[in-house]
Length: 181
Length: 170
Image: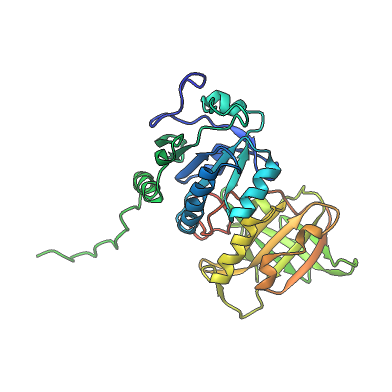
């Protein structure tokens, strides 16, 4: 992936970046994704009404994600303490990462150039395989470009089917003589 | 490390066969017993031992406070109990401590929770959500027992193949 000129796209492998989380602890993307499918979301900030609306959907999805061996990560340019307050306010229980210096934003080409006040991330959502390959990328600059929870569910199903060797529930081994004429 | 978990016990006598052990004291300095950890597969399972995330134990670890919530003998609470799942959600929503591992009695049953901080006070452990489910003892241990774990990623409240929560992969 050319990290300076090309935005991450489906099929690329995401760079394994490291950022402080909402508590200020340094976290690597690969550590947070672990061995599971992941939703990686970049958002403008707590102040954006579109982000607030989208987060309400993610918080609803969280009730399913928490039992589905799946990870969620949200990234913004807000400082950790602002992310911590926003996270607590919306009831999110996943990890938020802070790119306050905007270095990752620059690497990924995800600066929203039309907002010269906040200089936020372009709202973007990626669904990831455990090895950080991108399954789908959603450009949410316009709100309807963002994935619905149903679309995220379909992506996570496809990824899980691809990575879970026991996706088809195992059956008991056939006993000797069983099923023969 | 071949397995992501060890055996753990809090008992009145010291354990000579444990790979990590330390005397445990109450907040007022009263000796309360010993904490001990054994490697899984290194002999028979010690009596009364529970599975704990291996990262919670470090024979070189710094002194720590431990909030030890233990199910009473004969009490059987499933990991899937809504109260247990809610305690996990509270852990994920709050500020992480240096160590947090549920304790595994058997593949389906929780034996308690081990939460610890290396700070000089136990203030971080004042609101242990697992203390709402199980009787809780606050312990102080010296150097040589408690490890350090990354904060859980969230939002998962399920375990991987019967390992202690919040282990983060298969």
